[in-house]
Length: 391
Image (cartoon, rainbow, N blue to C red; front, side):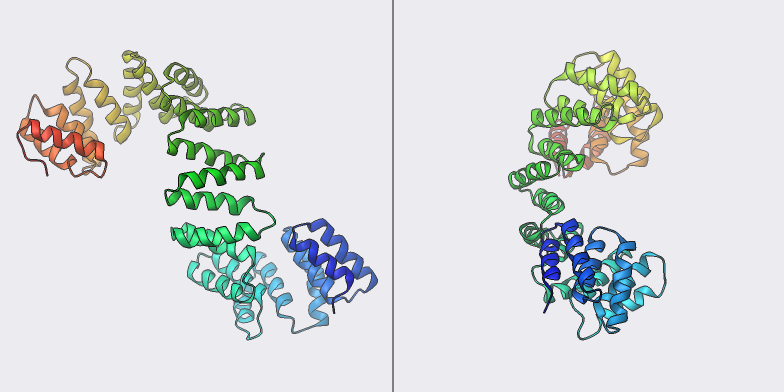
């Protein structure tokens, strides 16, 4: 029967009160230095804290007292593997293969295999662990993270949902559950979860960045712009947050504000082609075509096969007298590198309308099968204008 100190320590460990757990286990060991439950509990707590040096002494004492203690041997093998001992992995596999192996023996093996890229082996180990401890939040979370990475979305939602309910520290499970719902297209649920993640981790920028991206995806551009402001206040001068703010303002049709923010960004990171391209978009929307042209020509000069920049510049040229000829040159160069890109084919078709209808038809035909409905519809309309039958 476990001592009172061991029982208290395990209760604290279960709810994530790690410092209280350490104190309880140490109090038990002061009363009884060979209390195996306290030795194991102290080792588990130090491992949960990421304190390998603190975990090793109680584990070594435990295997002295119980040479066949599989969990203690498994934890020691993890520490040895982390230190680069080649044979530690084989020991982890052998320990997990024992008929009496428990949850931690399989869980430790799963982590070891996952770190080495063996996702199938890791999944099998985590599932074996869950057979022994079905409601373990850590194993559910690791399996949920693994299935999310493999885009097995329904499984990930189930596993991460269970981990969220069971975990004492819900920050990561909630965040990943939000991402799983995003991948499934369930943006309302994803937004509710990412709001919770922001509350749980107010000082961690990651959930706040996720909230911004979700707002952009959901079309709530003012909310995205406000979140970008919040991030900028948290980390003044952060180039990524300046860019996010500028892009959200562009999407909100706040073009003058977007221009000011993006000009600040371009001064901060003048080498950023994305920043200059975004600034060009703001300038074009404000009808400052010379500024937009100068920016985009500079970007295309440095990155002549950048599809987005080339298409932006070609579209700008179409607004200018004699622009079609200039557009043909940059589009042909980009198509030589991206011969199947439908957007390039569409713009090349437009550029060729008045000079080579046959070539325009060929390019429009290639664009007409695009997965992008806007590109596809424009290409099909061009084909109708050219007297050809859309694909």
